[in-house]
Image 1 (cartoon, rainbow, N blue to C red):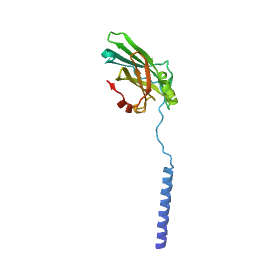
Image 2 (image 1 turned 60 degrees about the horizontal axis):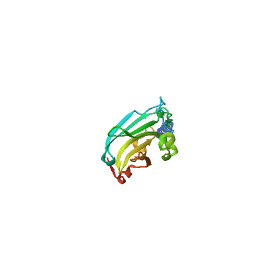
Image 3 (image 1 turned 135 degrees about the vertical axis):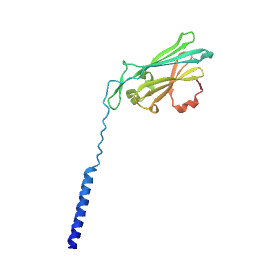
Length: 187
């Protein structure tokens, strides 16, 4: 009788362990189910319109006003992210006026203005995010131009240094924030 009871218990234990393994195997087949769905594209997104103006002392200590106005420009090519969401690129105007209100410099910049500095990815998938007045280096007004993929963090931007000379000429070169220490800029 003891043998039968022992055999029955061993058989029951073996069946339970097989059953529990089968259940576990059915639950853990290596596929993880999630409820995540990629965002559905909506109407093209636009940046907000912004205007920043700053008074500076520049050539021979004279007063100038630097005004930067950015806005989405629907005449420019749209950029699309990996989810198919479209974004309207920006046009940014830089005006420099003298204290007597006469215009010294006026130019509207788009991503195309900086095409020589962009790789294929940035030409096709980035927008002109901002142009910011950085300061004065010698007789050069100095600006930081930022291009990035829409909705990316600022750490993922491509930055360029743009300078306007006292004759209204512009120059552009690559820039990283580590380069700031090499510039002799007064703000």
